[in-house]
Length: 164
Image 1 (cartoon, rainbow, N blue to C red):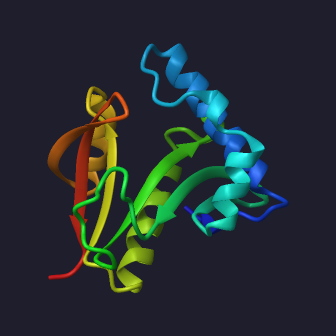
Image 2: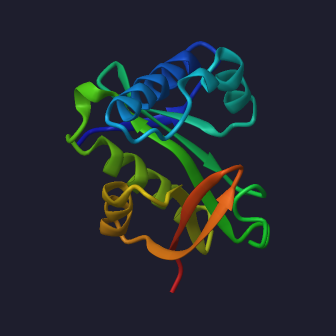
C-alpha cells in the first residue's frame, strides 16, 4: 500500500474530524460505540494541529485515515516515564477503504516513527469489550499489559517493545 502519512495542517485538519465522525457513527450503528461523534469539532482538530499530534493518511490525493501520535499520555499512562514511549490514539479510516490495510499502514507508520525517534515502547489503549479490535492490535504485535477504567471507559492497555 502506498499510504503517505503527514501532519495535519490548519487547512486540512477537518478531514481528520470527518473521518473520526464517520467511524464513530459506524461503530454506533454496529452497536459498539467507541467515541462520541460530537467531540470531533473544528476546535478539536485545530488543537491537534497546534500540538503537532494530528496526522492524516493519504492515498493519492484523498485523506483516508487519521491517527493521533503523542510523546506523553498522562491521562491513560501516568506511570510511564517521560521520554520512554510514544503513544497513539484515535486511529480511524474512511469506510470506503475499510479492510484495505490502511489501519495497518497507519500503525506501521507509528511504529517506525517511534522507533526512529529512539522510543523504547509504542503504547496505546482500546475499549476492553471490543474483542475484534483487540485481536487486530494483537495481530500487529502489541502485548496486552493490563486494563484500566478512565472517565467511565473500561480500557485494555497495549504496548510494543521497540528496542531489544
